[in-house]
Image 1 (tube, rainbow over the protein chains, first blue to last red):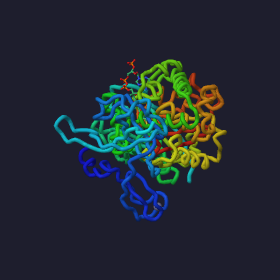
Image 2: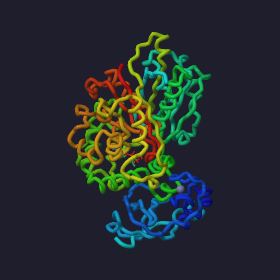
Image 3: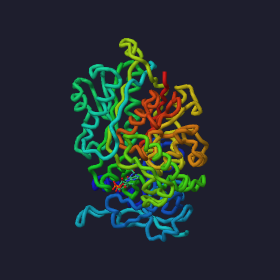
Length: 130
Length: 385
Ligand SMILES: CC(C)(COP(=O)(O)OP(=O)(O)OC[C@H]1O[C@@H](n2cnc3c(N)ncnc32)[C@H](O)[C@@H]1OP(=O)(O)O)[C@@H](O)C(=O)NCCC(=O)NCCS
Ligand SMILES: [Zn+2]
């Protein structure tokens, strides 16, 4: 995944999405035409780093690179501006992970290409107020 | 638009196979040609549905399949829409024949994944979703459907026992399908005690990774008349919609907008309501998906479908049988084949060839095929002539 990951790094490092300059609709990841008003006047926008859990799972099935983290919590999060994001949930007690819990983004190692290859960093979220 | 008929359909057994996707596609196609009562050279063009050809290092299956049928000149390309590849290929073929461009087309769905280990298979499946922004965050398909299940449970009070009832019903139906992957009777307790895959979904809430192929042949009315063929089944409606390609960009996590749009399109063309359906084959990749499908199709109110399953209203002898074939859950889910295999079940049901799982006096059947978490949906409606 190295090439696309590098190209998209600002979206992973700082959660950069888009805002529509005509109707203020925001979304993540970036878009080119506003899904709401179809305007082409779009700017980059850093998403807020806090939000609430709208759904979640404790997964026992792995994706590549997460084998040693099972079971892992994954959250569907509504950020404070109303934009949704999917993220791993870390540094949180399993019983605190529930719908409406407040979460905050943290910067973490996400994955690596083998033992000596490139290391990927990006956002994960943790519960700050269950 | 011209009237189009479903004239032949057949599938291989689903499960773990030693054959390649290529060989499986040839078997299903040959069988469909035989039961359509036509010759291979009557086929003018074809679409192949195959999502994971590269897992076998073989793309561009079409010309190989056509050559094996002795018609290498017939154009054939692959249509890929993740788990909705089969339904999408059928839709595109329908458009070609209904518009009058071709008279006869073959649609073949095929998949071979059982040679992959669980992690590799799970990863290939995730490529059909938003891989960079959901898969790379650790969310597999079971993980994403688990999030949908949790949202549905939160919103409507749906329970794990109710989800389990979907699996029990589909395994019951699959017991009568000798081509089903998992022919095994299970109880609600078996489902609840099966290993957790992505909480709240367990092993028995999920469809398996299957190999298999299915093929269908459609023809114009003019071709039927010219060759004096008996018109058995007509295609009454074809609906196809896109939806948000990611789960997180959707407005409602417990509904698929693409199912709503595709089904309204197909029902509108057919000029019927869901009340007129005698049965439906819906996309139950996970038990929650069958609940959401029935609600989005309009068969039950939001929040009511799971109750209906528990009450037996969707069993083969219920008021609206859902997945008499056993569905993806029991019959299996060879991705590219799945949408075409649903149409094979409709063909068997409407021609009275479904044996012990025959729906009584089946006249109108619907197929509903979904790709990823709703990025693609195809709905077709068929009627016995
Ligand atoms: C649940 C899942 C991870 C299990 O895969 P797996 O771990 O590779 O399973 P295996 O093939 O090793 O099978 C282990 C056993 O469980 C059984 N099994 C596998 N999947 C099963 C299922 N879905 N339901 C019931 N039993 C199943 C197998 O028959 C086997 O039994 P046996 O040991 O008696 O032969 C996998 O089936 C899965 O991810 N399914 C969902 C597929 C999906 O996401 N589809 C796309 C939807 S959009
Ligand atoms: Zn706008």
